[in-house]
Image (cartoon, rainbow, N blue to C red; front, top):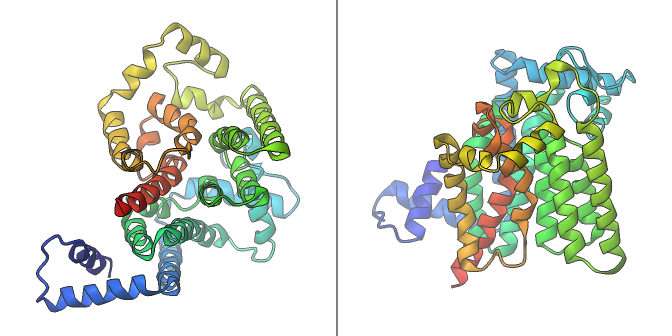
Length: 365
């Protein structure tokens, strides 16, 4: 079905696909059906979600998931749901909060109480990813039916989404969904609570999402007026304090992520900052390594579209992902730049929504 939609896309935009083929005619009709109403697109998203959930269940029963991470988060959610706290004995941290800044997992713990099954996170993971697709498609629909259909095709073929479906579960999927909706509400100029609720959830998913939420709060403080500006400014201050308290707090040696990701620069926030101050060319050298240059070159293609068309002007969304882009670029740990791992989820919402904005602006030119 997705291949047929791609053929229809080529036909729709005049790429010279022969129209005499029965397959092409069917694909064109399918395209017209997709574009007809938002309910048709909602049905496709629902079918995508159903397939993803069944796929995840099959993978779990076949023991083809990376069970280590799935086990870590299941234990933490189970511990919260049963009033034992965020247990993390599998990872060796003892407590999840000694591993990641993830208080938002308590939301999943509340839902876990009603299910109490080891398959809970197996189903929750694809549903969170589907919520992201729903956010992107809905925002694109506000820009025009054709745009939302194209975003739907793009999301269905996006390798990081399918790569993360194979991951099993990670707290990043909750942050991914929450940040996507917060950005959508920001672009649609919604009120304070529409943005604050998903942004708070995202901030409590992982320390990198906490940094993103800090940058987002500062952007909102700049864009909003009056009392709301002060609220966002103080939110940013509190997030900065939470990040510093977490990073400068005691660590289990095996859970020192500076050693894992940035071993060449230092062993903690203070030594890494000092090293970067003494070696300002370090980041430049890292960013121009082959794998990093290819990674950011691919992202730049999508990001450049709204910049060229003028849709980027005034949104400032790139400001939000500066911490994640810098962390991925400076890391000496290879999996951080793997498009099939959860790290890339921190960048995708901004890239996807800038692509939507850029494509919508380009179609009006």
